[in-house]
Length: 112
Image (cartoon, rainbow, N blue to C red; front, side):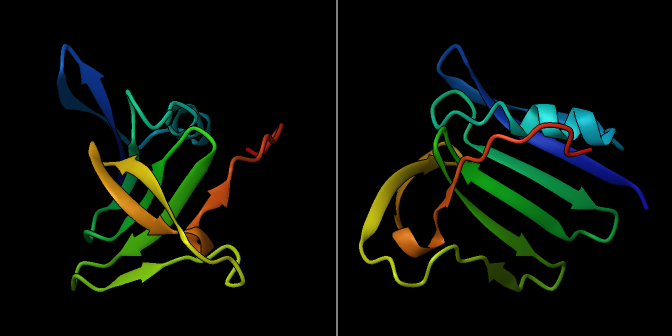
């Protein structure tokens, strides 16, 4: 299956995308690690049939969702007991996201 990985990057006051076709696992993780909530705010993997896996936010909290080619979306929740919202920049846009949807940054070694 062919996939592409994309990340937004702020350069000279405008967001552009870096896109990599069929990235290695390590290359995809390296792009994902660039999410800082300011210069890079969204990472997306797109399959050849149009399905997307998206991680947005940073640097300490992230949201995760999937979108299928039929435009259905599946949000992932981290802790349903958390109330309130947190403002994050995702896709270069500010938004208030449910705290129950926010995943904390986890440092891992040797994941691939």
